[in-house]
Length: 418
Image 1 (spheres, rainbow, N blue to C red):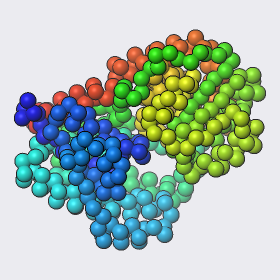
Image 2 (cartoon, rainbow, N blue to C red):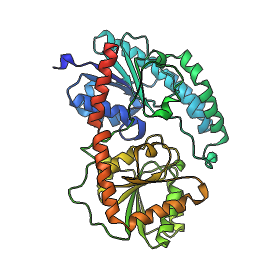
Image 3 (cartoon, rainbow, N blue to C red):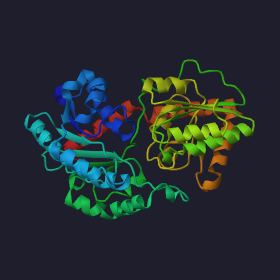
Image 4 (cartoon, one colour):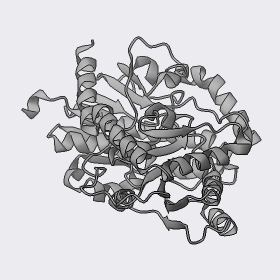
């Protein structure tokens, strides 16, 4: 049977299970393919060896690592003193291209050994980022890509002046970079998560397919057998993610304080860590939320799922979220979502399974969030109805198993040249 299946090589230098976000996507593709008995291999960077050695222990013989070299270390050392806004786009991309040089050497070895029929490069998800994986004699599938995001009107200051300059420059230079490094031009298939990303592609390509970026592992994120009793007037919220400014947690805390003033017993469990944590803890105390907001730090997936099972809803007031896998995870567990009506969450949610809150105008974003909290706190039956609708939507559109079914169809089409 395995002889009839394409030998897939997934190339993703930043593949990791603990970071979350785009880094998790290649891990999941590889893991499900191997669990199904497909002859798949993964190339990642050695910095993620401890993580992947644990997560992918049964399949570790099929995971290959790019080791750090003097080139990596010296380039990163040069960029380290510079501001993040310059270091990440400039020196991060240079390091990425160095990685791709070493990746290609390893890819050629595996192809020469007859171990690769098709290459899949799921990350980076940036539509404008160039790829040097081409000219190897096997078809290449790139994506799903997701991007072309800006902040909502009124939030322009969330990017520093340097970041604004580099973002504009990157968007203008994307076509040139992809002409000089033409992997995307030569790919068999380009996958995009949405029309917003399709519009940002820096190359004209005859085979662009829309495929949602994120999926849900229903073996982890499943509806509880018995949901905790709903309490009218109370709302137990969960946030899952990195505590960085763009997640809008300062607005969330102000909204909780406002909703409590309105008479709703709103509480929040924060699952995640990051540079904003200490400031957010101070803000929560200043707002009188010390007994109503818990900061639990990073927690593994299984523990996050357990906290979500005990909650009434998920909140994600993010202002720059291309995807938002946590939205799908909450929906899969029958939990409604309150999210900013911007980016990825707006692609996933509708009013049957959550409440989308316009982030602009900025001055009263927290008040609109508070109204949404109050609405769900006072309507347990509405929460139940939304939760059931979310489950149906996940099973029909976002199940990881169905996503892998689709990607296998795309591999076959790439191999047949159709």
